[in-house]
Image (cartoon, rainbow, N blue to C red; front, side):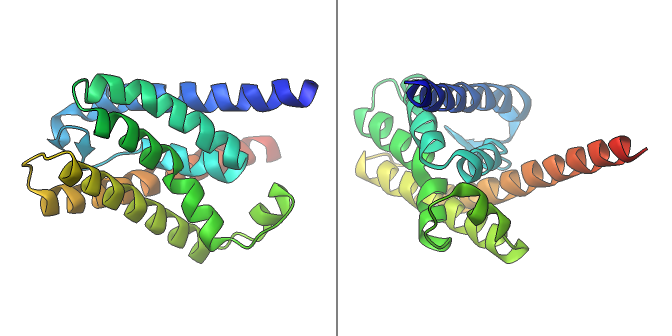
Length: 182
Protein backbone atom coordinates (compact mmCIF):
# COMPACT_ATOMS: atom_id res chain seq x y z
CA UNK A 1 0.00 0.00 0.00
CA UNK A 2 2.85 2.40 0.82
CA UNK A 3 4.42 1.75 -2.57
CA UNK A 4 1.12 2.58 -4.29
CA UNK A 5 0.89 5.85 -2.38
CA UNK A 6 4.51 6.70 -3.23
CA UNK A 7 4.05 5.97 -6.92
CA UNK A 8 0.78 7.93 -6.99
CA UNK A 9 2.53 10.88 -5.37
CA UNK A 10 5.25 10.73 -8.05
CA UNK A 11 2.55 10.85 -10.74
CA UNK A 12 0.75 13.78 -9.08
CA UNK A 13 4.04 15.62 -8.51
CA UNK A 14 5.00 15.29 -12.18
CA UNK A 15 1.54 16.40 -13.33
CA UNK A 16 1.72 19.50 -11.14
CA UNK A 17 5.29 20.26 -12.20
CA UNK A 18 4.29 19.97 -15.87
CA UNK A 19 1.35 22.33 -15.40
CA UNK A 20 3.44 24.81 -13.41
CA UNK A 21 6.25 24.74 -15.97
CA UNK A 22 3.79 25.37 -18.81
CA UNK A 23 2.23 28.30 -16.95
CA UNK A 24 5.59 29.86 -15.96
CA UNK A 25 6.95 29.40 -19.48
CA UNK A 26 3.87 31.09 -20.94
CA UNK A 27 4.25 33.98 -18.55
CA UNK A 28 7.97 34.50 -19.20
CA UNK A 29 8.34 33.63 -22.90
CA UNK A 30 4.90 34.51 -24.25
CA UNK A 31 6.34 37.07 -26.67
CA UNK A 32 8.41 34.42 -28.44
CA UNK A 33 5.51 32.19 -29.50
CA UNK A 34 5.65 31.21 -33.17
CA UNK A 35 2.20 29.61 -33.26
CA UNK A 36 -0.27 28.56 -30.59
CA UNK A 37 1.76 26.42 -28.17
CA UNK A 38 5.06 26.67 -30.11
CA UNK A 39 7.90 28.62 -28.47
CA UNK A 40 11.43 29.33 -29.69
CA UNK A 41 12.68 28.38 -26.22
CA UNK A 42 10.60 25.80 -24.40
CA UNK A 43 12.40 24.90 -21.16
CA UNK A 44 9.54 22.72 -19.82
CA UNK A 45 10.77 20.09 -22.28
CA UNK A 46 13.96 19.96 -20.22
CA UNK A 47 11.90 19.48 -17.07
CA UNK A 48 10.00 16.61 -18.73
CA UNK A 49 13.32 15.13 -19.78
CA UNK A 50 14.81 15.25 -16.27
CA UNK A 51 11.65 14.02 -14.54
CA UNK A 52 11.46 11.11 -16.95
CA UNK A 53 15.10 10.20 -16.36
CA UNK A 54 14.48 10.14 -12.63
CA UNK A 55 10.95 8.74 -12.33
CA UNK A 56 10.48 6.98 -15.68
CA UNK A 57 6.94 5.71 -16.33
CA UNK A 58 5.53 7.52 -13.30
CA UNK A 59 6.80 10.79 -14.74
CA UNK A 60 5.35 9.94 -18.15
CA UNK A 61 1.95 9.18 -16.60
CA UNK A 62 1.98 12.38 -14.56
CA UNK A 63 3.13 14.47 -17.50
CA UNK A 64 0.39 13.03 -19.70
CA UNK A 65 -2.23 13.88 -17.05
CA UNK A 66 -0.81 17.38 -16.62
CA UNK A 67 -0.79 17.80 -20.39
CA UNK A 68 -4.46 16.83 -20.54
CA UNK A 69 -5.22 19.82 -18.33
CA UNK A 70 -3.01 22.14 -20.40
CA UNK A 71 -4.46 20.88 -23.71
CA UNK A 72 -7.97 21.77 -22.55
CA UNK A 73 -6.81 25.38 -22.25
CA UNK A 74 -4.65 25.46 -25.37
CA UNK A 75 -7.04 23.76 -27.82
CA UNK A 76 -10.53 23.98 -26.25
CA UNK A 77 -12.37 23.15 -29.50
CA UNK A 78 -10.03 20.52 -30.98
CA UNK A 79 -10.40 17.03 -29.45
CA UNK A 80 -7.67 15.58 -31.71
CA UNK A 81 -5.13 18.05 -30.33
CA UNK A 82 -6.45 17.73 -26.77
CA UNK A 83 -5.91 13.98 -26.64
CA UNK A 84 -3.02 13.59 -29.06
CA UNK A 85 -0.89 16.49 -27.87
CA UNK A 86 -1.24 15.26 -24.29
CA UNK A 87 -0.01 11.82 -25.24
CA UNK A 88 2.86 13.11 -27.39
CA UNK A 89 4.17 15.77 -25.01
CA UNK A 90 3.79 13.64 -21.91
CA UNK A 91 5.42 10.53 -23.31
CA UNK A 92 8.06 11.74 -25.79
CA UNK A 93 10.91 11.73 -23.27
CA UNK A 94 9.90 8.28 -21.98
CA UNK A 95 9.73 6.81 -25.49
CA UNK A 96 13.17 8.26 -26.25
CA UNK A 97 14.57 6.91 -22.99
CA UNK A 98 13.20 3.40 -23.58
CA UNK A 99 14.53 3.33 -27.13
CA UNK A 100 18.05 4.59 -26.40
CA UNK A 101 18.99 3.34 -22.94
CA UNK A 102 19.45 -0.36 -22.42
CA UNK A 103 16.84 -2.21 -20.45
CA UNK A 104 17.67 -2.41 -16.76
CA UNK A 105 15.66 -3.45 -13.74
CA UNK A 106 16.73 -0.48 -11.65
CA UNK A 107 16.77 3.21 -12.41
CA UNK A 108 20.07 3.95 -10.62
CA UNK A 109 22.00 1.57 -12.86
CA UNK A 110 20.56 3.30 -15.92
CA UNK A 111 21.42 6.74 -14.56
CA UNK A 112 24.98 5.75 -13.68
CA UNK A 113 25.62 4.73 -17.29
CA UNK A 114 24.51 8.07 -18.73
CA UNK A 115 27.15 9.73 -20.84
CA UNK A 116 27.04 13.21 -22.38
CA UNK A 117 26.45 11.55 -25.76
CA UNK A 118 23.47 9.62 -24.32
CA UNK A 119 22.02 12.80 -22.86
CA UNK A 120 22.34 14.65 -26.17
CA UNK A 121 20.83 11.68 -28.02
CA UNK A 122 17.95 11.44 -25.54
CA UNK A 123 17.24 15.16 -25.71
CA UNK A 124 17.40 15.17 -29.51
CA UNK A 125 15.21 12.11 -29.98
CA UNK A 126 12.71 13.35 -27.42
CA UNK A 127 12.51 16.74 -29.16
CA UNK A 128 12.11 15.04 -32.54
CA UNK A 129 9.30 12.81 -31.27
CA UNK A 130 7.56 15.77 -29.66
CA UNK A 131 7.89 18.13 -32.63
CA UNK A 132 6.98 15.49 -35.22
CA UNK A 133 4.06 14.23 -33.17
CA UNK A 134 2.61 17.69 -32.66
CA UNK A 135 3.10 18.56 -36.34
CA UNK A 136 1.37 15.38 -37.48
CA UNK A 137 -1.47 16.10 -35.07
CA UNK A 138 -1.84 19.63 -36.46
CA UNK A 139 -1.95 18.25 -39.98
CA UNK A 140 -4.47 15.60 -38.90
CA UNK A 141 -6.69 18.14 -37.20
CA UNK A 142 -6.84 20.21 -40.39
CA UNK A 143 -5.03 23.36 -39.29
CA UNK A 144 -3.69 25.55 -42.06
CA UNK A 145 -0.58 26.62 -40.17
CA UNK A 146 2.80 26.52 -41.97
CA UNK A 147 3.63 23.01 -40.74
CA UNK A 148 7.30 22.94 -41.74
CA UNK A 149 7.95 26.21 -39.90
CA UNK A 150 6.10 24.97 -36.83
CA UNK A 151 8.05 21.70 -36.84
CA UNK A 152 11.39 23.50 -37.12
CA UNK A 153 10.44 26.03 -34.43
CA UNK A 154 9.15 23.38 -32.06
CA UNK A 155 12.23 21.20 -32.58
CA UNK A 156 14.55 24.14 -31.95
CA UNK A 157 12.48 25.29 -28.96
CA UNK A 158 12.49 21.86 -27.36
CA UNK A 159 16.22 21.39 -27.94
CA UNK A 160 17.13 24.87 -26.70
CA UNK A 161 14.76 24.56 -23.77
CA UNK A 162 16.14 21.18 -22.75
CA UNK A 163 19.73 22.44 -22.96
CA UNK A 164 18.87 25.60 -21.04
CA UNK A 165 17.15 23.60 -18.31
CA UNK A 166 19.90 20.98 -18.07
CA UNK A 167 22.69 23.56 -17.90
CA UNK A 168 20.80 25.62 -15.33
CA UNK A 169 20.33 22.46 -13.26
CA UNK A 170 24.02 21.62 -13.67
CA UNK A 171 25.00 25.13 -12.53
CA UNK A 172 22.75 24.88 -9.47
CA UNK A 173 24.24 21.50 -8.55
CA UNK A 174 27.75 22.88 -9.06
CA UNK A 175 27.01 25.87 -6.77
CA UNK A 176 25.51 23.61 -4.11
CA UNK A 177 28.51 21.29 -4.31
CA UNK A 178 30.92 24.21 -3.93
CA UNK A 179 29.01 25.52 -0.90
CA UNK A 180 28.94 22.12 0.78
CA UNK A 181 32.68 21.61 0.29
CA UNK A 182 33.55 24.89 2.04
